[in-house]
Length: 205
Image (cartoon, rainbow, N blue to C red; front, top):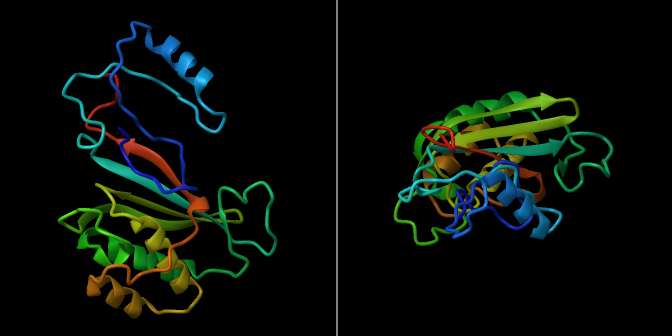
């Protein structure tokens, strides 16, 4: 079981996975054994023994995602798989104003592509913001959990705002409409990365 679901093409630096094993190997040996058999684009960084009642998904306090946009006149072969190429400049101030709107507990139905059996579309966004790092524009969001495609839908709408295609009032109206999929289209999955999953105490403690 994984702590956070990701779409095809989305990356993860801090995914947490739990599983039952009868192996008596110590954790470091288990890490080396897993990495021996895993494909080259997946690597286990650490392993811990958990209590029987630990639930990797329900016990998580929050998930942190970042979305990387290469905001440059020219594309980069080095970041093409890990960032969205955007040759037009973005209005960072307007995008950060919208980031303030989505903070707190809200009904994010407009940012979901489907309900996937979920009864509630309320989510609590603890932090969100945009910053420039060289040629990259980076969106960061931390929430208790996310609806299907919520982050990519949020980024897609923020980009439309940053390009001047909509105003902050329209962004707010889309959010308040609570209409499934209204905020689309989705941004490309390549720029999205699960950075961290937070728990009440460090894993292994």
